[in-house]
Length: 184
Image (cartoon, rainbow, N blue to C red; front, side, top):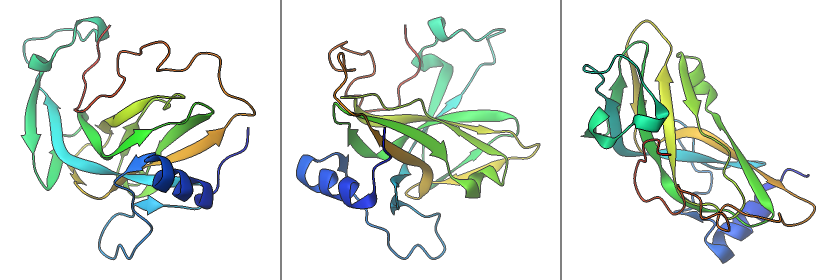
């Protein structure tokens, strides 16, 4: 399975609205980089966050999470408490082709501050805003910046289309428009 170069990504973004809005690499002086890269796309943070509020919980269970376990926050940046996390979403909306798998990684700029970015693979024919878990592994609070790069999506093309896509399975996170907490 070959990793796809920038010209394929750019063409698919333009012709098939694979990434909306699509940013070409631009001068990002003073900002964490985003946009088209050699073999991927550096996606940005939107300005909405879900900050965990687990004061009444002794145990977290992905089968029992709900919106009430989080408070909504909107801002140009978000401060993540030491040894905690927030949920966020990408500024970009993605539409993944049936013969492509997307693997996401955190930006090294944040990793150097103890920030761990977790995004599961974007499966063939999944679409939506990416829900991002951003964990602060450091012993002090850390700030993340809305509208700037948070992770890189690397596009891998299969030799042939998958038999069953995420859309075919009617996946529970299909076409998500907001930050989505876990659901079963």
